[in-house]
Length: 408
Image 1 (cartoon, one colour):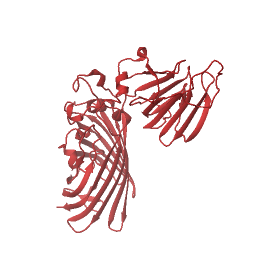
Image 2 (image 1 turned 60 degrees about the vertical axis):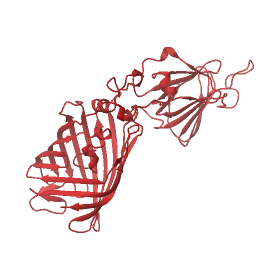
Image 3 (image 1 turned 45 degrees about the vertical axis):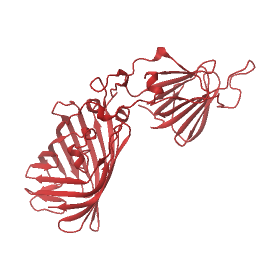
Image 4 (image 1 turned 90 degrees about the vertical axis):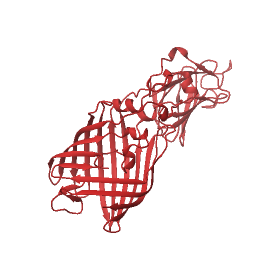
């Protein structure tokens, strides 16, 4: 938590005009979400801070206090963006514990992210067959398997990821069954006239015996996430697939690009205003920042809620945070264009802005005047707009550190 600069210092503040320098030494790691990106070791974590009457410096960030009283604080803030740290192993943020997530503080019902979908059709009819006969949801030989989809719609009806089974009448009077088991949604009994729409699809595979047919007329040039696939069935029980993405992207399971093979991503400088509201056991921090270096001309809105407490000599802090990033930021760092690859089928432009989410736990125990123990555990969930990029393999970033801290 940002310390308050005061002349008469109490436990949660720093004296005006004093420099504070410390070095954390221990074992830690920050995961790298980029495809074939190397995880980042955290061994040495230097920290430098200075608080004057108005000016303050905290590691890579600096600011100027416009107003401050017991509860409220308004600051002008200048801080680097941090998305480039995943592309550069020696980025300055890779030598800080917070990873730059928060400067001073350290569409409709979705089926679920990463839900698998199994789709099977009605058995082939005979002349004596009538609509809806046969076991509900009985499958034809083979089917369509989708390893990941974030939204499922059957005949314009959104399917939510609720455990259990349900049935409803299809377009041809057939019974369609939907069952959710663990992380898989099973859809059976689709017939000609039914239409299953899947958003956020990474790949489509054919089960043994399935007969697939691509609808070439419904495939415009791939334009980014969310990728959408429609699965229908014709009179011969062939699965008719159409999609926004080109069929080779789907069949080859979302080809990915190693981050080290793309163009260099620069560090951006962000400037804006910060507001902090402090209670005895709770603090709220809000930052509105924009790029002032012309790197991506995007903006961020960061918010964090912090709960610190003491347990004997041990100091704990729990942080919940979000970080809204504009489309310009996501496109510059995670978009793919002619600057990166020659194959236009791999181009990617985020469809919208995105929101990161953070959960963090800090612990510190003083041992002597100069030494203390420190542990930190942090989890950041990346937005779908980042995860859909061919540059990104993982949906989250984890950070862990434990070691000793020497205070100069």
